[in-house]
Structure formats: structure tokens, C-alpha cells
Length: 287
Length: 68
Image 1: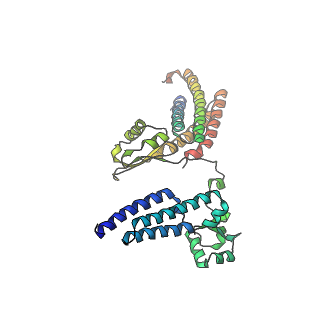
Image 2 (image 1 turned 135 degrees about the horizontal axis):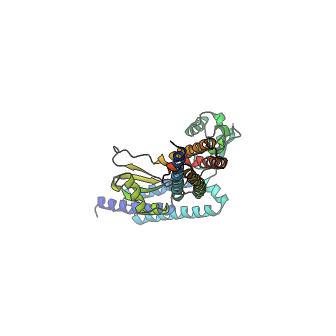
Image 3 (image 1 turned 60 degrees about the horizontal axis):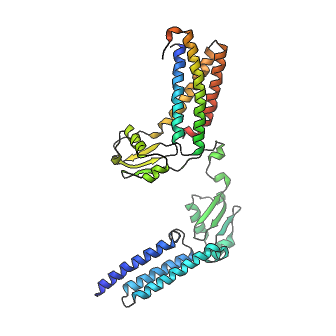
């Protein structure tokens, strides 16, 4: 076998092996590299590279090396799943860098972090002033997690005392002009409904690049042809709110205008009902 | 416009709201929102019934404006 063919075969073989091994080890390997995973990743890569290029090495030796290494990592991961102590030792644990708004210099020294690096990590979290931080931990994977002081946290509905509203995640039901039946079923709709929705907007399914259904069952779409204007689907709820307000005002007016006592009471009662109903619906109808 | 036609217009709007709430109740994914929309739809139904009765009374009073 000529050298070039030998190398080509080795490359393909090792790509397959590495692919299978990374599939086995899961997503964790990619997202948060602990020290141990970092080292093992590099080592496995080097073994593969060495065996591929250096044709004097036997392929089997490389495969055995990689497999044993992967097996070892696998065992370590299984063990760290079961024991917290082991996990802390192998993968490391977070170090508190800022507590009660004060920087813990000793811990920074232990982690060999300079002030510049700390400020840089804080800036990455959109914090430029140290006084905004209440608590910060340097995680095992090297990122900084920051808890800003209450005054500097983003305002929420709860802060404003608004009634709580829960929204479900939107589902993508059309992608590149293809209907995704699984997502469509999850939302409790079917193809006929989707077709009817598209028909009301005079759009063919082939022209839809992306279609999503939100928590209130409205379909929002993006077309391939950007020149076509799509009406905004949020029209209905605000319109309903306007209708409610109009009706409520009408009823109050009728209550004032009528001479019949019983009708006056009836109008006033219903105006109050509408008002209460409006208060309850407001957080849902307003975006 | 007469009182009667104003009340009828209001009745029509209430019907719009009722059907809109009904649609939202069916389409919403969140259980809490679904229930709220449904409850408010029932409130609209009560209001609608009251106004419908009133429309009947008005038609009896102003016979010349008898409509649908």
C-alpha cells in the first residue's frame, strides 16, 4: 500500500473512532471543559495525530491507546456522578472571589487571577463598577458567575408588582417551507389549521422560511420573499382591549342616560363586571 | 342615533369580545391563561344576556326602531 493511501485510510478510520467516542462521552465534553477533560481531549487528539502521520506506528496501538484513555475518562465520569467528594477533587469546585461586595484577595491569589483579569471577566458580564457586585464565584470551568446587588439587577414584573403571567415557549412549525408535524401536534394544531391560517394571509407554504406558534396560538411567519409585507399577528389582543374599553364606557354612559331605575342598575352592574374583567385580562392582552 | 341602536352596537361589540376570548381560550398553551380567558368569556356571556334583555325592552318601548 502506498504511503498516501495508508495515511488516507488512517485518517478516515480515526475520524470515525473519534466521532464515536465523542458521541459516547456526551455534550459535556464540548461545553464545560474541566481540567481533566481538557487534558484528556488534547491527549486523545495527539495520539490520533501521531498515529495518522507517522506510518511507522501501528494503527492498532493508536486505537488501543485512545480507547483505554476514553474508557478511563468514562469511568472517572461515572464515579464523579456518584460521589460529590470525588467530583470536587477531579473536576474542581468554584472559588468565591467576591463576597458581601468585597474582593477576597487570598482566593484570587490561590487561583492566580490578577485584578485586570477579574475586571475583564466582570466587564464580560456588563459590569464596569465593582461596587455593583454582591457576590461572584470563579467556576471550575474558568468562567465568572456574578450576583449583582439587588439595586443593579434587571427589573422584573415582580418588582413592578404586576400580576404574574406565564408564557410557554414558541414552537417552530414551519422551516424552509416544510411543515414540522411533531411540533405542530405538540401545540395541538393540525395541518388543516395551518393551511387555513396561511390562506387568510394569502401565503403559500412554499414561500414560508420560518413559522412559529406562540403561547396564545398566533402564527408568526417570515417569508423567503422579503418584499411581501406580512401583517403583524399581534393585532387581535390590543383590538380586543380597545373593544372592552369602548363597551365599558358605553355601558356607563347608558347608565347615566336611562331614566328607568332597573336598567340603570343593570348597566352599572355590567359596567363594573367589564371593568373587573378588563383588569384581569390586561396583563395577557398587553405586550 | 337612537338609544336602541347604540345599545345594539354595544351588544355586537360584546359578542366580538366573547368570540375573541373563546378563540384565545382554545388556542392558548398555558393552562392558567386558558382558564382565565374561559372565565372572562363566561362573564361576557352574562353581560351579553343582560344587554339582550334590555334590547328587547327597548324594542317594546320604541316599536318603530325594531330591528334584527
